[in-house]
Length: 272
Ligand code: DC
Image 1: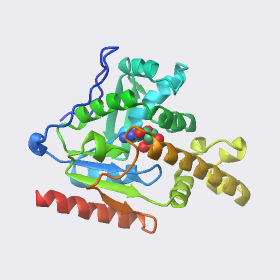
Image 2 (image 1 turned 120 degrees about the horizontal axis):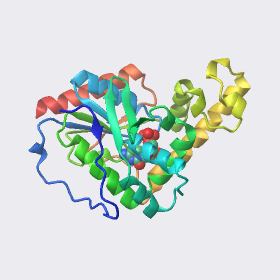
Image 3 (image 1 turned 180 degrees about the vertical axis):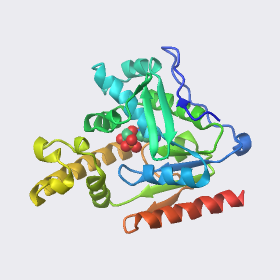
Image 4 (image 1 turned 120 degrees about the vertical axis):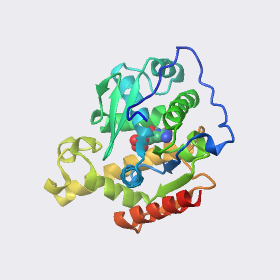
């Protein structure tokens, strides 16, 4: 299996048609593990861990929305007009290179892995992801990337829209305050929402308690805004698939989450 995943470009003006998946879960040789959930729940950490543990490749679908959002920013596209964005997508090459700790992301051959984590791209990705046809375009790419199985695919709609027949579906959730706090501890200084530019760009440890409080509030506000958009959009809103196992990590340690998810994958895979 190749370990570079490049979304094929499509001819312009071809509207993507998402057909239902064939009702044949055995079409692939290895399983698909779908991990969905809101921002900051720890999906990427979990996906990377499960991929290492089971010898699968991890694919961060959010990185694809982010890469396209970055191209839209760089080319001055409006985020609320679908047709031009779709046209842009058709002329865009997004490559995911699974690594031990996440994905290296190439946009038209250029490494944008760090840039796409910055705040302007984070917000733009959430805004462009509401569009119906754009999502259909993404779903087609993502199905192609995971078609052979042996992947842990992480996002918002993997278990509901991309691979509704995934062998394992985990919906990883946590209370917004807990997710906000975790983000605050992990976040790179440049990702912090810029309400108070100078203090927000320092690392948390060098901030005064007041600066930390302001930065935390900004992160939480941004997270709730994205949550709202992701959960309330008309197209594939963020919600657990009916057959997903919900893992609420609000009062769990990282080790507990990883161990529980491993158990879930084990029990599903060994039952097949
Ligand atoms: O997982 P992330 O934070 O990198 O995702 C960025 C944005 O992309 C997120 O706000 C919603 C969107 N997204 C989506 O709509 N569907 C996916 N499968 C993955 C991400």
